[in-house]
Length: 529
Image (cartoon, rainbow, N blue to C red; front, side, top):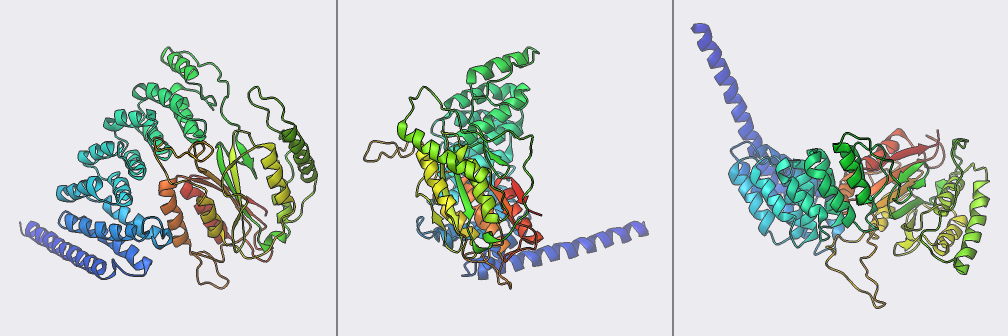
């Protein structure tokens, strides 16, 4: 009995210390947030949001949520209606989301649900909806399903992200309904397809996915690809390629009947390949380094003899030959042959050779743009253009005469590329230009190829090192902030030998570049030794 009493006393003492420490930790977090939640320094605001997570302890949840919502609202207001986006810190927004996801007490959750429905700023509601993805309460799932019908596309995208994180079977019917609707933004559909995949209930999902596939337009190739992947998983089809809903109906019938599905016909757009990385998209921006160090030597891998030769795309439909297009094609072929046969030694030569091959083979259904960057980025065009031979020839002439100069501003290149990505909008809100064309017919880009040969060393999100390099945390937080809404995949190519040249690649710079790809669902490759 004495031993038991001693043990209980010890436990009580330990618990007392623990509770006291927790109370002190909350007091410190709350005090820090009061002092620095409105600081001019973004890192202090971000730390304030992060520290408030300790308030989700069953005692202070509602207070912590209220303080976090205040920080979030103030941060979102800094963009002044979209005019000053660079004043909004990605680190602050992501830290607010991460802390809000830990809310568990009913009063705190109720406050979140109320603000998700009523807050006057759609951007605040967007981040709250994403946060609700981490809240276990069933009311959170019901609110997210309701938000799928919101009039503001940002809120719909946030709700889709939240439902993806929850992946509850009870939400499947609402998810499939939104997937089939032409009013749902494509950015939301990407998350909803992923939610269906995570819920993993084929019998309840396949018919709705097939119907959703049939409702997707030609410019939504990335969403189509994701739907096809999930249908392939559910129907037992390896490496599926067709977007024909009738074929998938037969494949599903065969699967349920115990038969092997027939081989599909491969009707989707051919992937765009650049430095070995492939993107199955119809809306692509190439973000290309033209800095001074691109004039340095580089070790390029030998050509794979087993790889089929690059060929121009086949003509689609029953279009009659266009003399102007045929003439442009002949000139483009001349530039292609020039660079295809050239032995390259410098990075700029390798870029010209690879880019020429990519553009020459570009599928005519693809719309594309190019951003050249060094200290100051320069877009080739201000809009995405179709891959006609006239447009291909124009950009091939540009790359042929490109000369390297200047420092490396990777964020400047990406920021310019993001300007070619439209603000998400509902397909029922259609703008018509003076010629009667639907401005939303081909929406902004959903895929980037970023090529660089060195370190981000000038412009925004540059650290204080010598030589200067990226402020990795701030840079990646900014990418996450923008991409939370835009859903752009960034494939990254690092070009150059390690430790060689005027702006050498290091392991740290490779890690940083790979992180950009990882954070956006892209692929990464290093060309060099």
